[in-house]
Length: 309
Image (cartoon, rainbow, N blue to C red; front, top):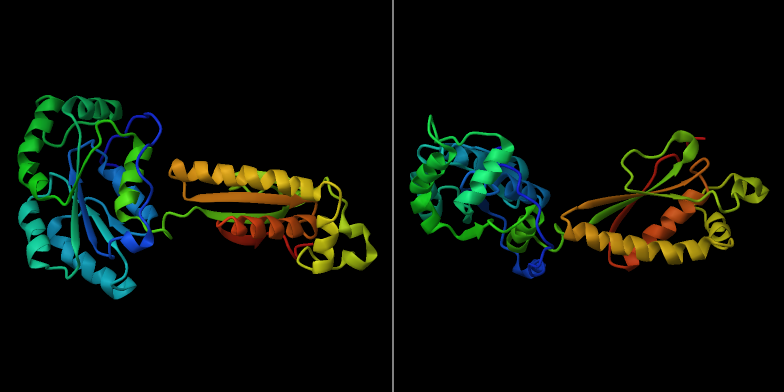
């Protein structure tokens, strides 16, 4: 989805909160169109993150075939989004069919993205790309021609978003408001236990070192067990500093989680390490995950190096 220029940074997001699951539209077909540089690719990427099957620059005549293939392979509950731009010849007739003759059998929403000409010019110049309709003329000539071609479509669009004053995060949140469900917009957190001697997970956003706690490896009755064993877990969590660490670390993670959501991030990975990834890191990973779930977070646990010794 590289047909749009990157939107510029701006101030903090002030849009309303994401819709509840009960208000989320049924799975259907979303057609994304509008002016070049207005953010079509950004909107499409957000829909992809929300679980949509996204196809960029699809000729409208092929939309029914794509819907049919998705219905067969993924089922009718798989939402679909297609990006269509001004270069699509039979665009209006095809869109009219989808809206009024229901050729795909799915409820269809047309999203039209727009912005002021001076903003579109700046975005296209920053991307150093010509407009598809400018020919030998100026970039502004291409934009003016595009507005003429898309005028009818803008009039029948279900949702028009003016991105003139929006940055990437504000646009993605606007898309989430209309198409996101409570489940698809939750931050998905992975907590990984690991052993430092095997290396730090390369995808970790945050790394916590549990080597400040006494090692159960040196306790004969605990050595052969792992941090998933209740006796080992109780031993680790009862050590000086363990509870203090959890009491300080969890509010930080909760704060960061909220910030990630505001910035449009969907995934966070927390790595918890000890020497071999068997005792302390495993026990503390389970406890961190447990406390995050108690805060309402969507959490999964991976014990990367368990059994590797």
